[in-house]
Length: 398
Image (cartoon, rainbow, N blue to C red; front, side, top):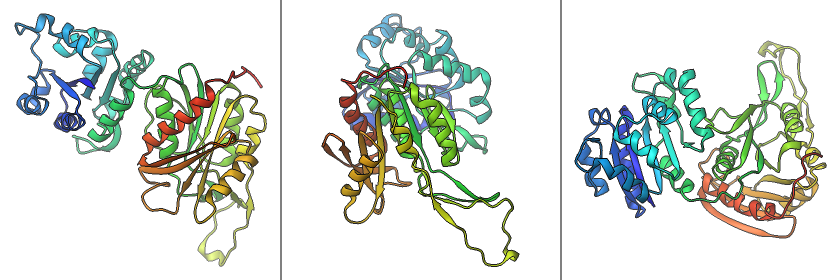
């Protein structure tokens, strides 16, 4: 891959050197462009040595008059990391007053931004509007995450880590757009079933797999709605609705299902629902048993009226006979595919950053996906589903 890396003025600029190193380790070519404020935080020489190319920043250098044009013909990706509020505003409004913003107007390939700024800035309506405008034009975003910021405070606005940024760049550059025009509904995270006003029964699902599926569907061109109980950040361009209980998830599914082409049911829905108590239990109440009743099978209920829509279920299994149980679940839930993963293994499944799964289809297909980051697993799942979706004509209503 040939990438232009734009570095703007942010304390996170020091992390951009690691981005260059990771690209070079992959064998990619990188040209680095600095804004003038970036030079206040990091030295161009570091980036010149790491990339093997001189850093570009001076609009009035002898070659600058045509450099941005020739660079646009060379590059396959424009990545800006960190992307300050200033740079995001310039890109959104087509302002070209330095080398980076001028180059951006010449660049015709994919654009990926890794925002970095204080929480108040990231949440400001002006920044949100600029981000939305860029997302509507196809610009992708990675992060920001939540964490400690330069001010010493903590919150959203922290630049994504270099590994995550390079991963997003590699996936998005020249990748498949096989879901373009498709409407995808993804569920993620655990349900929480109340025992009393302060306690609930839940499970270990983190929502990472569901969020990865939503992000990769969006990157592949889909119109994505994510129903989630997780507080994980969601990239621009994905519509989000939140739920807590299985009943709330069911209501959201019933409202959204008719408009989708694919339902990716990655949420971990409670198998058992406790008896709901009107008042809080206290220790002084003495010993107390909580009655659990089987919960409603939300997926089976919604899939019973799927028509030509594709429904993908998930089976979190452990012990022997996992695939047999997963196949039974697929039939019981009227799913087209089921994703079976062994949650009893360390380092994969619930709460982990990696997964290892087996994809089973109602048509008899079996695809093993070896241990890898969840975004890569998500792409493998979408590869399988896309092959099924390619010949389906989805009706507008059911």
